[in-house]
Image (tube, rainbow, N blue to C red; front, side):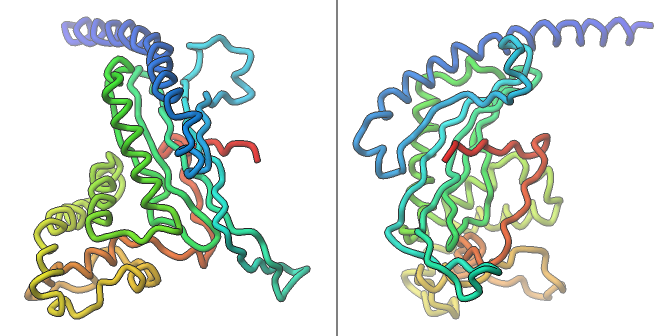
Length: 288
């Protein structure tokens, strides 16, 4: 059968090419290491909680040679002290005890796929009092490690540093920063795959409206019917989803609505459960 031979040859070629792409991983790691060494001991790195670049190798893989398992390289941020205390309640201390407040869990990591492709994720800071709506974002998908050139790696680092500065509890995000976060979320490959047609359309409208409705802030901010100050927006609950009913006239997407959709939320409830690693690979927390 002609189809049997045709697709057998395709699989054979894929097998060879996937091995060749996976063998490019060590060279990519060296390029990332070279960029990391430029910032590792910089005084500026201390403001982020310091950075640590390390491979993520489960204990079960320790005895295996490199290349026999899917590799992962992670740039981890250390914990950042916020100079505040928070109240922590428990059965033993129902009135609560004062605990030092810090933010952590921020990271950028590079995942290898069986085909040899590389996916780059980044996760925001989180703390007991503030957490972003997104657990992590895919910021890049590359067909092979060789696509991550020095220029691309530097751009990814720059995006990560900007994202960290915006997701810190001490920062008040501007309208343009909210729009930038929305754009990153929209570009995430999982947006369309996992949230369905309605969510896809919703994010398309949000992304298009980000540029179209900023003018509302200046000539007719009052027409939005809400104060768009960052302080108020950060303390409102996030409500994103399909409309319960169909309106005869579409609701105008004004600046305050855009901010409401993108705002961080207070960590007043239990932390979201993480998805399985086959769907959304999550970073391994650094010791301590």
